[in-house]
Length: 249
Image (cartoon, rainbow, N blue to C red; front, side, top):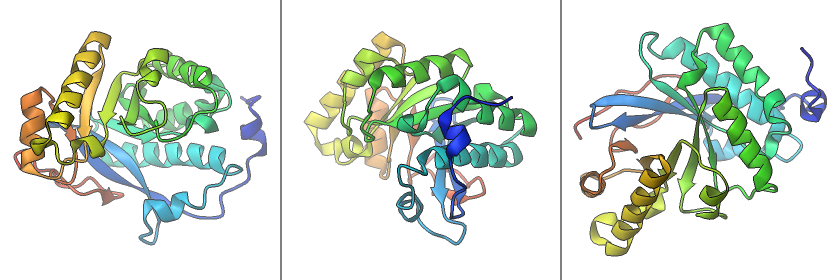
């Protein structure tokens, strides 16, 4: 089936190679790995920044699509077949021309490798300035309709802040590491997290705290009522592999 999407027709092949590393998200209440986030890496050890710095506006659609395909293909090979472990994929809202058309490649890839699309979470960062928040709302609505999980990454650190949740509600928000860092000794940060949790519960949104590096950060956030976490305290990302995870750091 041919898409009417301009990006599908006109995007040029990428002039660089890349792959994915996987970083776990843990559920400490259930003592399981809740999912893995796919993170861009170079095939020769380049950092995410070195790859992303090559993605200009003309290449962002092709890169966004290629990231989805690479992440789903690797997840289909690496993830346990009998578990509900989720795959989290970052996407660029400004690279999605038409939600229903631009998701076709992801759906086709998932079918090809036998990966249940209900296990896929699409997360976007509010650090990316959005040209059209109504367009983003349409993307979120379409992805939810198709059964995907949706998430806002780096919540609290970007351009729009709470305005995003006023315009649309994702299934998940990931509290930014800048709020997490120093939280054991910061009453202000603790109050902010408490407020986020009250708001999330009222909206039916799941909260993940990311960037956890110390036991003190973990203990403070656990006491606040968070159960889902991501950070170096549990594991480092592994390139084209699932890392060993510490559920009792």
